[in-house]
Image (cartoon, rainbow over all chains, first blue to last red; front, top):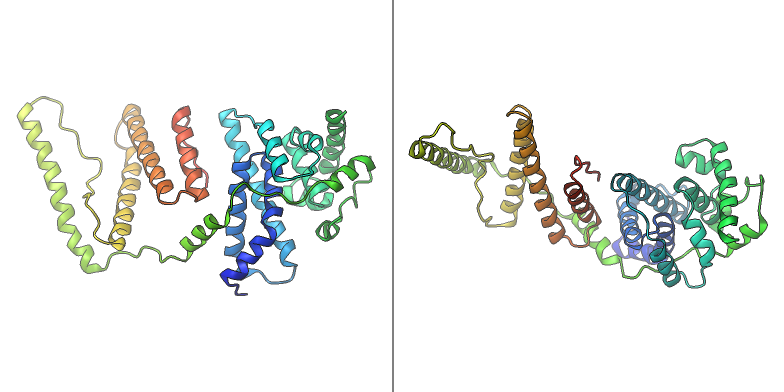
Length: 162
Length: 188
């Protein structure tokens, strides 16, 4: 399937905010989130010729964005484990306030403070709308693990927002 | 709930311990966010880079012409080493050149790309010889020199493509590895 540059730009303009939101929540780092948006759309451009049209373009693009964000988070986690770095949650909250007017900052902070595995699952389930079985498949873990992480995350979120 | 959310079936299997209040808060959470800058130009630069023709190997005639130049450069470096050794006459031999790649100013973009390709091959081939070239001290020195060259190359990549995330990532990783003294683990 051939797409012109103009069509691709229209696709970008329609979806980049959604992709940035995903990337920002996953990484909690505005700079890294911008890199992931770029990476995701470059992946989309490179994969467009092989897009078979069986799924909706927006669903496919969303999936590519989530994969790019997950890849980004994992490579960063590996690097941070080596360098003993911490995420700056104050900077993240400031960026959420700027980039997502009307966001529930207590909720966003609480989600951002969750442990890595639980945070990814909460974002995928509650915000991105994935079912537990899909999350399990995407992350390569058991569905029971997803459910128990969600259970634990709900408790942690309530404690954080109490 | 958005159409996309319905496609994925949010909440369809979260019945164990559902929390309607929490779900309602998530339901209201924005699904879109505005980056602080326009990211489109950087994306265009990257995909334009995809479309650019890849450097092609030199035609045989030019490759043939390059052989005497490289040989001459190698002879000059070797002869200099011998002269230095004879003049000072010590037991320590003059240092051998690590790379015998002639460094010149490329006349055109094709030649510049070919030069990068040649230097890259020589760099990798010199690295592959490190293991057999001496003890751990020499190897560490070689690795340090290799990392330094890698960092220099990464700086140049970032200078050439300031908005390319991959170039930035390479520079960041190599710089961090050098700063922390870790063994380099470069992932792309």
